[in-house]
Image 1 (spheres, rainbow, N blue to C red):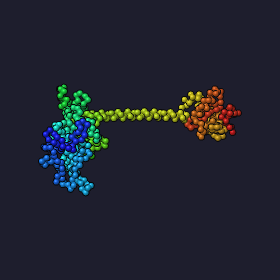
Image 2 (cartoon, rainbow, N blue to C red):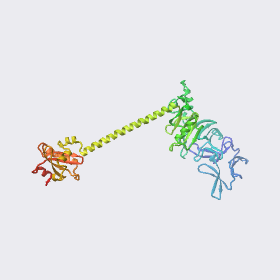
Image 3 (cartoon, rainbow, N blue to C red):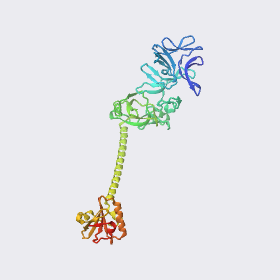
Image 4 (cartoon, rainbow, N blue to C red):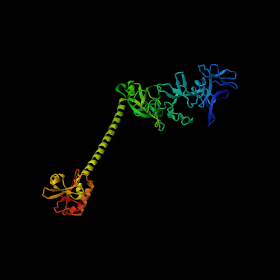
Length: 478
């Protein structure tokens, strides 16, 4: 902090190192009250205020603390904040005044902008009148105290542009963005309901459902704004359409409620014919809403950081959009249900087919595989008198063998696979196929098989005096 010379006098400033100019002035105490003479004195006076005295001891500048301190001290913090405190009992410190409440043209880390209604203070940045004159110039930047506060750059009393994002990169003080970046940053470039899109020509476009106010084809007409294609009629039931990716409009005529949900906000807006739009305040939590009254101004298309805005439209436009949305939902629902049904049918068909193969219900295919007769379980059961114990011939390696008589009086031997046997369907089919290949079916002793449900059986021609089957399968006749 030091006194530096202006062309005709000295001013008290706070400066910090700058890579560009060696030092950058970040705060000025005596903006419009330079010190005449060669020197000045900064001190705490008897009223516990920080004062700057000229060479002739007249007060050039003073803090405005109204609290008389017991032990006032002045500190210049590392943040660049010049503070006046009252130190009590060597430990407790009460803040009396700070330079951060009176910014000039530079926003330092830790500074606040906006109104402090408690003390009636408006913290805002103001440009220098010229490069050598720190007195406030025409441009100011601060927060407008609307219901939905807006950060605005003013040129006198005229809005110059509104900033929707941060300027500084964390706390490094590195400038990574500047405003206005393009014509779309200038306030109200495209008029009411016009949205500015910097990537197209002309940059001023109308939202869907709107048209330019003039259709003369003159390029200047693009900046006059847009109007609804179909005029609003509050009595006939207007509706709303959601527009995404927008910089929110000027909030001067807005109203905020932090407890409403989406449906309540919509109903609130419909109650007032001058309510033109609403949106959520908390995008993540979808809670709290803002409502706009009157024409919407200073809209801009912002792809990455834009928000959704629900704009009032005529019943015809809003119903059309709602119908389109419902039709899309119906189409998506029909497609989803159809796909689910098809998949279900495929799965069911697969399991039925698999079950039939496992349970031996696909007789035709098994007959083709084994080239043998497939006997029905009911026929075999009747032939063996329901597997009567007196018809039991013996016990094989995989189960009992029964004697039976077919309807044509032909005697058969039935090898019934035990349910506790580890021989499965595949092994049984392999056994049948192997025997079928060894001898012709009209000459050999194996007549066929029965595979149905859990029952798996081999049907042989009955040989009273034993046969090669005894030596192959190890039958033990009783």
